Length: 248
Image 1 (tube, helix red, strand yellow):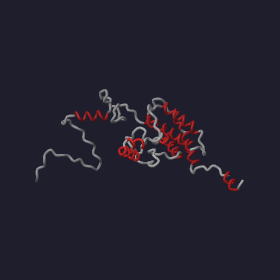
Image 2 (cartoon, rainbow, N blue to C red):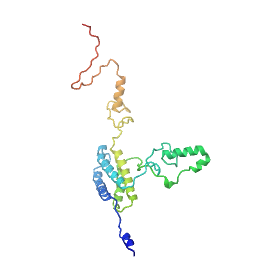
Image 3 (tube, rainbow, N blue to C red):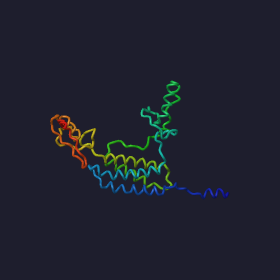
Image 4 (tube, rainbow, N blue to C red):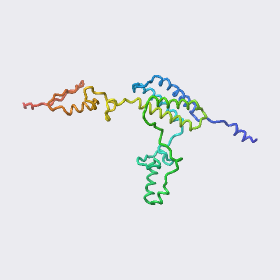
């Protein structure tokens, strides 16, 4: 065997820079999630989910740093370009490429339609990280975290990039569920103020205290006395005089 071949065969696997530290941080962050989850129960207050949502976001950021960078648009030519809000079915999300395709369709007609056909399914990449469908419940959060726990036991220094992509996706799903559970529930039934307090004196269907107060102020007559706002220290209230002071 040649000396060059011996030297080449003795070369081992090179761990990417920073992976051991980041992997240790990910293992520790995911391992602490179980302790937070044990304290939760069905009907828990949204504020009790905030610690879980914060820990999940930290773990997700660490896993996303270990995984390869994702294309924002799914386009190899314009990975961070503008998104097309009206992309037809089967097309990509890149606004620049879709505009080129539309111009080609208009100029070439049917021939351009065949030339600008949608790319194969293998080239269609998803946008960013996955978002689970509602309903967002504690059971769904536990299922996502169980999947994360199963994946983290198989992670190592020499794990392929696809493994880090999968656990980052799973952590993002769990984070979305925890984030939605940590938001104030819409007890007032108001679409404008979903986290508003309930007005106990409001009629049924109008429990939002902000909308009820706005309605009362609109129905108040002009002669009804109104409490003036409190004056801050060091300021003087400018009162409008009813009669002008006579000169002299």
